[in-house]
Amino acid sequence: MLTLTVLLRCLSSAIREALLQTLNECAQHQIAQVQISHLFLQLLKQPEPNELIFLLDRYDISVLELRRQLNSALLSAHIQSHSTLVLSEALIILLQQAWQFSQAEQCPQINIFHLLQALMDTDILLCQKACSPVIDQVERPEILNSHLTIIPV
Image (cartoon, rainbow, N blue to C red; front, side, top):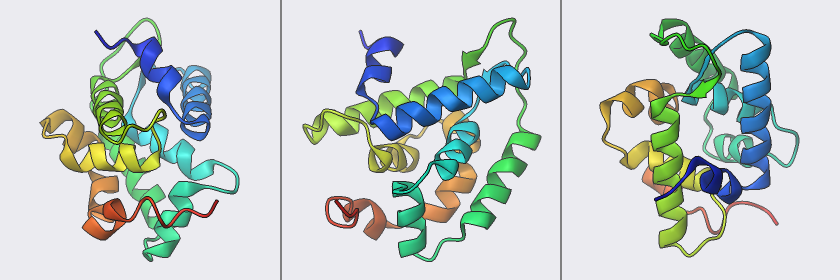
């Protein structure tokens, strides 16, 4: 069985750092359930080189508009109350799906492309609704199919 601990170890350093920062911010703001939108907002804040911003710029996707849509999605999300900080079901499903894509490519770490591919391919309504702003912006086959060549080394 794939545990959350295993998933966290499989994240790229940038995604792991973004997730940790997301957890800290949510705890500071007393947000008990971490959503996919929280993670993507934090990924947009990562310092250079930032794979997500590079990708958005390359395909003329507005970072500001995506940020606005992610914030709107958070405002309209029905977040269940918890006594402790937890990852939302949708975020866990997203990470599990991304892990499967990384394993299929024999890639030891989950990268931004695996997350995006998981967003596109997961048919769970909960996950689709939670991340629709990202899906609306990046649902382009050329983005997902070019991931081995567009990120500078």
